Image (cartoon, rainbow, N blue to C red):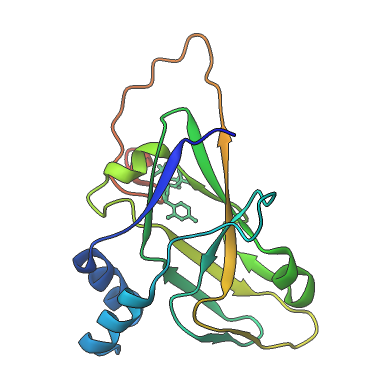
Length: 172
Ligand SMILES: O=c1ccn([C@H]2C[C@H](O)[C@@H](COP(=O)(O)OP(=O)(O)OP(=O)(O)O)O2)c(=O)[nH]1
């Protein structure tokens, strides 16, 4: 098995800043409590490919609702690997819980961004049965799988990433 990565928590400062941006009404002591309760992603069994990312809080999504969650997690990994974040099958099968970007691509150089490589997940309840989804704190909401990737023979990319979501496409 290739051991090529390590999960870490982002600093409390980074978590607090991101959390306040998404949920401005959260009290400072609550943010500390949420941060302290965050666990690193884990595989459920020896043969599981996916590292479950656990929800930092209880939350509910009514039909059509969307939430962007700062996970409190960053990942260091070898340069030729990528972490892909996918929905969990159970939540997809039962509720049509979707990731807004369908798959989250976490690049190895994201770790070195000013935001510490803080991983976010954006989820939408896309139910067609009018079901509300309840996720409890500490339960798996999405799963991440590491893949090794190749590059083309004539690839000379040398830009340096800082941030995510369009950070490398400012001039396009
Ligand atoms: O669900 C996601 C997807 C991405 N990211 C972070 C990690 C990734 O390395 C960075 C950039 O993502 P991506 O390369 O998919 O975004 P982009 O829109 O192509 O932007 P960029 O120009 O920054 O590559 O954002 C997340 O935290 N969650």
